[in-house]
Length: 122
Image 1 (cartoon, rainbow, N blue to C red):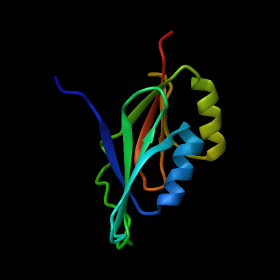
Image 2: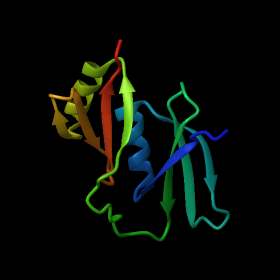
Image 3: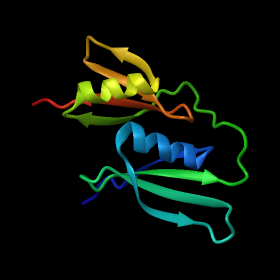
Image 4: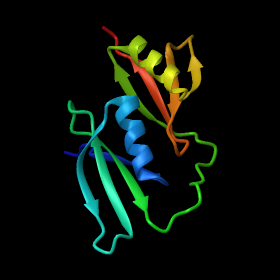
């Protein structure tokens, strides 16, 4: 058997990213792994419902934004409060693309990663 465990985003400003993920998606740190020499820190975020985590990796010496290429990848979340999250994300100004025909939209985090928001099918 094999299972998904986590996915990683490298971030430039850990505090800013933690605030974004808390405010935008209600994600909270579930564990951390700081390097003994302070050169990096890993923070794993959870949704409080599944075992899947988003790992945020911060590198002390990194000063340049990450090259995300054409950003042809994304992380997806499903919600039973689609309208509520859409309003929250609109207020935050983080919606970067909407596809009304498919009933989905995308937000972007402080480092430019795209996150898809999908309504649950009740």
